[in-house]
Image 1 (cartoon, rainbow, N blue to C red):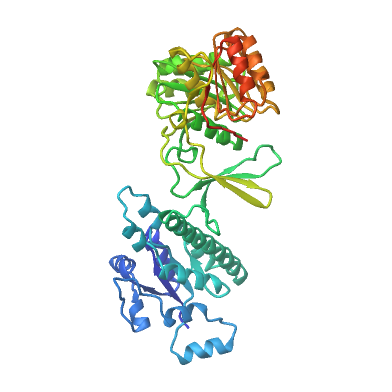
Image 2 (tube, one colour):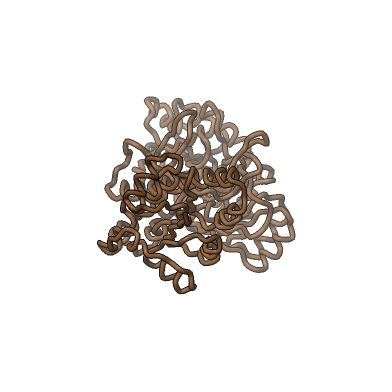
Length: 510
């Protein structure tokens, strides 16, 4: 019996040579709609699906292939006589190849002007049904959803039955991954449309972006996946201009740098080490901002990741070229800056949009489960600020407190940041008690602690942190407040003439 292939694709890349290859193997082609027209225009003989079903397309093409003549031909098992006898009695011909890819739902909803109706009309029904039928019966049916597999399918026609069966099984697995991702994207879109925050099942889909040499350590296998229709301002969307491939740790650190730099509208530079900001600087120019970020901690920036929110110019590139950096990310690099930095063989240069954009839920895997939470997107403008001490901050201290508060939310808890109005001068991260983090920040700051301000991601359980800061010369503090011992901290601040501001907003980061 002559073999049949049903071909219906929205992505026509490589279609004509592939179908020509099938025809050369004496395989009959069934098709419909735009795919049929494309094949006919290429001179390929095609049979209309409607001629097989003896039923016309209806409902503006919504119903074309949902018919027993199609699905019977896909699902009939060739090794079962009763299946083959039944479809013969019903004049149904087996279909041996299904070449289908789906309506462009992801591309449709990514358009800024896409309407809800546009999205609904780009939900494919017949395509997934055919793919799933063919994939279920992959013992007998070759199913192709990805144009990248065309060449392998044609080559397999000259191979052994065992080789063809192995390929059919791999292609079937890919189909179920593809349709699962397609359905997950639709489910996410509709769930968001009805504002269902925590549904009974969570459907997410990510696409493989990059194989990684290893994970955090050489013995851990790893890969990088990109969220479908994720934010444009993300490392997943960054364009790498130069350097070695990004590692697992590079990606994590670059993401941390990008999240910090989004906090700033004025020219700013952020240096990251092990996902903590080790130096942040601002200034009238990006060169000045970077110099201050470097001066904030010239030791820790070595081998670090740097993010900037302005174009990297020649002056800034000159300074950065004198330091060992793993990654530099920015919205743009001037031609002169690129030429200068590209002289360093291994440094990674990433161009990426730097804007807050739409928030996304944060997913954190645990052994056997998943935690979901909203992004910590709140800033000082969202806080209910109250000055709780006798002295109010000066204008200069307010500027410094604002900078410290922007940075401390991105430091691992317990977090303490010392800053002036232009840069961080000390960062204490991840200690088991808050006064320990303060001590580290103060030690790093040294003499620069005098006249600096202190930002804390959470309240002070005792007055000891205030006292430690006061003895180092800190003049103002910003912290959430809310401890049962707030009065103790306030009294200590008043005792040393420190201005203290409560935000009512906590920024734990684990």
